[in-house]
Amino acid sequence: MAAQPVTCSRSSMVSYSVGECANSLIMNSLFGFAMLYYTDALGLKHSDAGIAMALAVFWDAITDPVMGHITDNTKSKFGRRHPWLVVGGLGVIAAYVFLWYVPAVFRADTQLLFWYLVGINLVQRTAITVFYIPFTALGFEMCTDYRGRVTLQGIRSAMNMLANLLGPGLAWAVFFANNDVVRATSVEDNYLRMGLSFAAVSLLCILSVIVLTRKYIKDSRQMVTEGNSIGGFITDMKEIAADSYPRFVFIFITVITVGIALVSSLQMYLYEHFMRLGGVEKSITHGGSMVGFGIGALMAAFVARKLDKKGAVLFAGSLSVTCNFILAALFLPAILIPGQSVVLLSWPIPYAFIIFAILHGTYWLGNGIMFPTATSMMADVSEINEIKTGINKDGAYSAVFSFSQKCAISLGVLISGYSLSLIGFEPGKEVAQSADTLWRLCAVTLLAGPAISLISLALIRFYPVNNELLEKLRASRIPESVPSQREPLQGTSNTES
Image 1 (cartoon, rainbow, N blue to C red):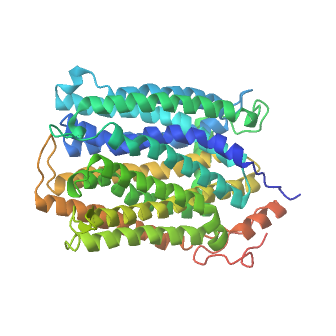
Image 2 (cartoon, rainbow, N blue to C red):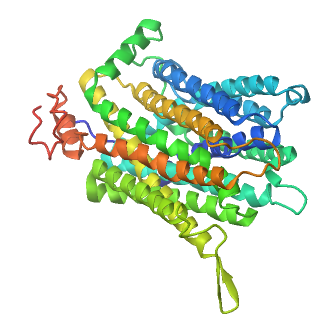
Image 3 (cartoon, helix red, strand yellow):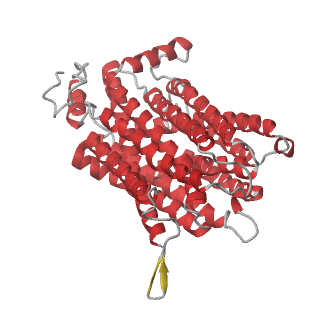
């Protein structure tokens, strides 16, 4: 019999996406401000901060597949996902508070500070894994419609950016407004106030998503699973590694995320030191990137309908890369200079800032289209595996997808930390960077990251799954012959059921 795809209402999609707000506040503030905090305010070397954060992200990555196996095989009257949402969510909040509240004994010595950053990040990343992998798998199960999946992931990404805009985006103006005495990013208390505020809101979001999605709880005590065991985990990983379909998505998301993580880690330094933006300008620029990403996420379903999913990510990736290359072509040869303005009707118009903010926001708009579409691709290939095996492994597939992203983020963060050291960036409060160092900062941010992203676009061209293939497999409910990995499918003519 044909497998009927399951969809859900827009209100259910929004209720689910409330959980993404907590993830957004915590992760985006960590990526946006943690390195600044530990280097500019606490005096840790940039390379040490990069190592500490990269180690934590790598640990997060390797624990994801383990958590995926655990949640898939959890037997509980409260289902396979919700018990872990409770445990992981509370752990995330507790660890997040201590990321910003650093006891005085650790601030007194940079070696102790380094190991404290490593330790608290490992604890936090473990908690994030326990919460986020079941949360992602829950989204895979709520909506199995090919195009509905893009809509769900688009709403989730848009909610991520809304929280990012109202949280880390406004943080520049709310918590880090400069004054004539000291640069705000060098004041420790500013980070603590931000951290406590975001922790309270994130806790509310986590509790809300647990309650709002309770109708999707399915008693799993009688569910057919492979059992939580080392052997079962190894079998899961072998099966996923041997599956040709997700391989395309894993490689694509890994490579492109390295480039995007590099840009994301360095863009705060670009705002602060190269562009020398004020608090309001940083909020506009950073907020504009979030608005761009959110708009892109909401556009993702429309673009995927017009171009299919592979075409959507190719279009979106090309748009992002082009925007950063244009910025590099304008600022590196000094065609535009930070702070340039023109007086129009007695009003100064900061056109260099305006152009930077628009193109930077459009860079993130392209990423906004790309990420929810890629996530929905992973849900598609997970369903194909279920058709072939008869066992739902959404947790394992979402975990390996997350593993790919986090390994890439870890590498991107590590590269960013070493890049700052290699270009001559000096740590500490109120340190004036040389003009050559700032030029190299601009070059690395605007050229290196997008160049890495370009590689991923060449790789995803051969992704073979489309709506026609998935519908045919649902109807057949028997294993399909795998199409050539060198030639993309056109409709279903190249696939036999």
